[in-house]
Image (cartoon, rainbow, N blue to C red):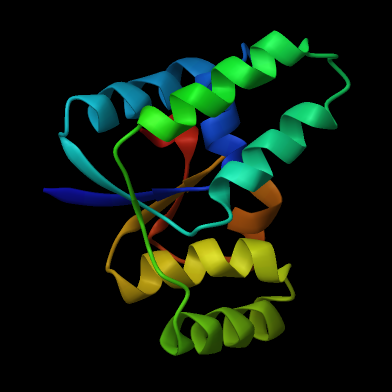
Length: 138
């Protein structure tokens, strides 16, 4: 079974219509049907909600509540934040000059031999790692 990590830029697209939302929803379908093992750090849900709350689009509280419920029902395998992940994330944050938030996703994918999907071209360009893919490639 393929192991996938997706950052918040992808998971937000499960719920909103944006560029590459169709690709993100294919990933969501693979998650729901258990075709892939979906690994996530514990901060994912908070980042998704933060992105929606701070979006230029104003979402109703009922929409935000629907997202909270949906996230709780997905089959995410939440990875513990452990020392190895901390160390790897810090190293990657420094080496690639990326936020620690982005580095946690990259480090988790690296440590678990997973593919990381993102919609953040800046992250892809910064790390230039073969396992970090744009969501349009899914």
